[in-house]
Amino acid sequence: MSIFHASRSSGVFAAAQRFGKSFMLPIAVLPAAGLLLGIGGALSNPNSIKAYPVLDIAWLQHVFTIMAAAGNIVFANLAILFAVGIAVGLARSDKGTAGLAAVLAFLVMNSTINALLKITGTLAKDSLASVGQGMSLGVQTLETGVFGGVVVGIMTYYLHKRFHKAELPQFLGFFGGSRFVPIVCSFAAIFLGCIMFVVWPHFQKIIFGLGGIVDSTGYIGTLIYGFVLRMLGPFGLHHIFYLPFWTTALGGTAVINGQLVEGTQRIFFAQLGDPATQHYYIGISRFMSGRFITMMFGLIGACLAMYQTAKPEKKKVVGGLLLSAGLTSFMTGITEPIEFSFLFVAPQLYVLHAFFDGCAFMIAHILEITVGQTFSGGCIDLILFGILQGNAKTNWLYIPMVGVPWFFLYYLSFKYLILKFDFKTLGREDDDAESEESEEAVQVTSRAAQVIEGLGGRANIEELDCCATRLRVTVKDPEKVRERLLKASGSRGVLRSGKGVQVIYGPQVSVIKNEVEELMHLDL
Image (cartoon, rainbow, N blue to C red; front, side):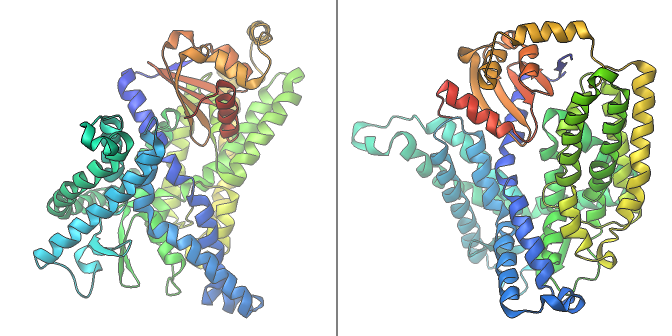
């Protein structure tokens, strides 16, 4: 398996990698919140009760109402979650201080905007939605949404990096170091609030315009969106690409229950609890629903193709790996275990996969499939946000109707190309290379020790973190990284660019990270 060397400069790649990783902290809470809101909102909806009278039990409805409220509060406060998550995710040390500073900065920024709205006489008294204002943590302010939270998080990170070791004169020494960070962030947030008050209304118009451009591109634009989204996956930068569509006005706007809601995902969850909703927002079909076709059906066909083309003596081992990876993709929508099994040995297959995925998004748009999701497009989300919502609202029946042919499309094309070009997918590796790797792996026993050794030893590791499926590491000397040891530890692939290294393991990566940290006695 060869290592993929990104063409970008190492500095840009490392910075983008860390920025993309920082999104995973707030994103990680969304599946749980989505489950609460999805189950609670769906089963407490008057239409659901009418369709299923067995749900009409007082105490049961109280439970569902509480679940919906618990889930809804998370989506209603995404901005501050992203502010804290990005600040904590980017900070290399003293992360608690960074998180506290982000909360204070977010509050001060919005309070400053509120004060300026009062001073200028533009504070809305009635319809907040019509003028782009809303409530944030009890403060009436401009609807900056997740974007505002991201800006606060980035600002906090830079100030934290600059001042968390600052030494003040002796008579002010108590306020130095970590204690100075929340102070300087609060003062900076006043100026940020003033800037946002002036700039944001114009920026909001630009976003609305961009949303119009995306809409005007029609089905081809949807295909391009899906293709680009999938191609960014290997770099771990796909979160940066899709989140603006999911959480800002770039993904559309809608007025629901008298409130302006921005972003495809936020609109979906607002409609989820609205009994008046007849059919979910069309933007869901553009930026979300296509995932179900690929993750639940297409990639399963790719797994079968790789299994059938594996060498006979290796099918038993390969079958277990692919069954686990396929089940993960089908149930949860986490696709990296499958994708990284062929990305490095056959990048042509990955480009084809990205094109097919773009086509799946386009077909979902054409058929107006509006099944929303929390994190990814697996069976769990399909049941909650498609089947339980009813076909009239979601057109979910089209997913298996398109999915079955999609399974055969992946299966036939992957099998043909693997055999035609002799791609070394799982179970087709050369025996000599395997024995060489096994010989090297024998020197290291435990998984954590193997990972550390593969990364060049303890002294070579500068920073260690992880996202949903990959270990993200900054090393001192990239030449010391040994891919064979990392592969022997269970890695499905390695990405390197300069000092930035990503080691793909799958959903169990957080356990591996903890094992490595414990062995290294790191306090990251």
